[in-house]
Image (tube, rainbow, N blue to C red; front, side, top):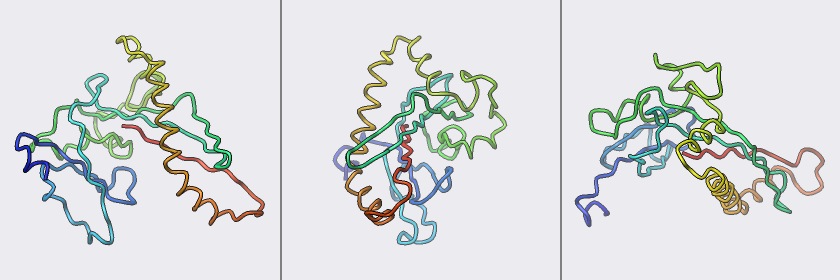
Length: 196
């Protein structure tokens, strides 16, 4: 519909199959009609979203950030965010998606389980280099470029809190079905938030 109303809008889309992990089944398309049917739509639905074609790059590589958040309690809501996280890097220098490079997963997808098979994968002896780095090393790099990392970190914390607040009603349902009231045992669980 958007394409019909604005012919100049020519986005790339990323297709992520539901229930997948480690990059399994993820691919890029230029036209939503190019969605592959792996199995049937009913057995494996997918999320289709616009792909960010101009991402922030470090060392000419696309990366993502994985932060770890502990949700200790839903009532009262108690959230802990680890002070450091992980950044996963693609192993091929980034280029904007074209029909010729849509299938180059080492350029477009940051999944460790995919990139470890690349000839360019770098096992790191340092937190500041390699195909997996600490989030704090990214913050240092951004700070050296003049970015306000205190504001960035504050914005990330705000995003985490808002995300968990939005998920709280559904989490309460799962929590109450898995750990009924009065049942002894653990009462906390981990939520991993992946920011791209």
